[in-house]
Amino acid sequence: KEQEALTVTRQAQKQFEDAPQFWELEIRLLARQKQLPQALEVARKAAKKWPDSAEMAFLLGSLLDETGDKNEAFKVMEHIITLHPENYQALNYVGYTLAQENRDLDKALSLLIRADELSPDQSYIVDSLAWVQYRLGRLEEAWASIRRCVELGGDDPAIWEHYGDIA
Image (cartoon, rainbow, N blue to C red; front, side, top):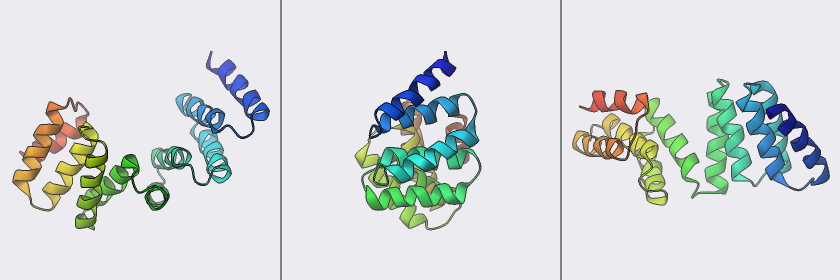
């Protein structure tokens, strides 16, 4: 009954104008229904309405990434780090992106170490850490990190691709 949920959510937004939860719910419902342009439009409005909200900004950045606007997503994630330097998800996004692009690797390593400290034992963060260590030529550290990632239950295909590259 996703369409009904969407209708109720929009009614709640009007009734409770200052409650960001209903905007977040609408964004997630639209994205779940693969209505990405509409989800992105609502996310942009919500990010303007709550400019200090890391959650709204992260949703916007994630949707930008998912719709292929990686440069804009990166800017949004960097902005989150400026406002909320302990947002481990944004730290991971920026650090991993830098590692993928093989640039600013020392910065990427610093961001990913911080993300791992803030939210230890998240397989996707440990994978990102392993990948930047690999890119830096720190092969023993990369091997230890990717093995730790797998032990944590990392089952994403990208993790196994990194595992193979590092091995």
